[in-house]
Image (cartoon, rainbow, N blue to C red; front, side, top):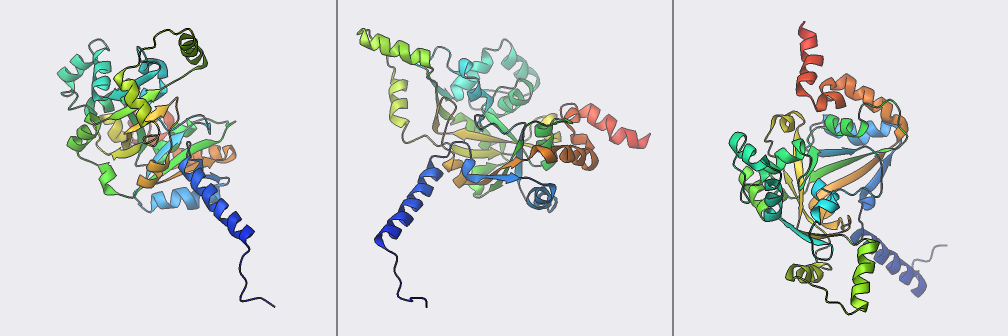
Length: 328
């Protein structure tokens, strides 16, 4: 007979509380979206979870990645290229802001000069357009590619391969707050002008060198930026995220591209906490089994052949191989 007056023991209550604390800790310390990671192991689940919401017209954003590598963070190319970002830095730390980004582009020979003569009017106050251009044609910017269409994201992950030895990754993002989204280039420029990221990288060699200098009582120069960085590490380990839907070039329009911008945080090596992004957006990280990837390649070829990987990077080829072929 069930005891309607049953009360859990102190031990059971303690275990329940510890489990709740453990979940909160895992949530706050997530660094690779594993807290929102889900597997898709068969085509039926793919159709139900991924394809059907896309075909229904639900406003979603996608990003595909070639392999499921836990060490590959969701990062802009600016922060992946640690050697470039940290050149001439104080103790392996660099403050990335609009001045840094624009000065870097100006260091690329006549890059800014030619861009301003032919494409736009780039400056620290008008940084979005040249950053979008650099992302697609120079592959180095503070922006992360997403797309409004499922098919391009799949092709970037699948790359028209016939054999897969690794699972692929598909990020699917949904807006929670419209304040984190813009289709206005002036707002995009404002967000980039306010870019505020500290990138730090400490390899074993540099750490040993610093310790040796301290032991030998050598003076170690610590800049004001470095001191500010140390003060902010604990409070700014999770970036704010913004989504920019302002196509500025033909390739971006063709791929239905949008950009994610991460700001107001510090990046330690290539790691940050994902909680703020997950609070701003409903985001899921799907691990898609390698066994169904050939089926997905054929699906893209059948349903959207202009978005095969070969065609994604060559719009002329996309039209010649699909549209023109049908009217001959």
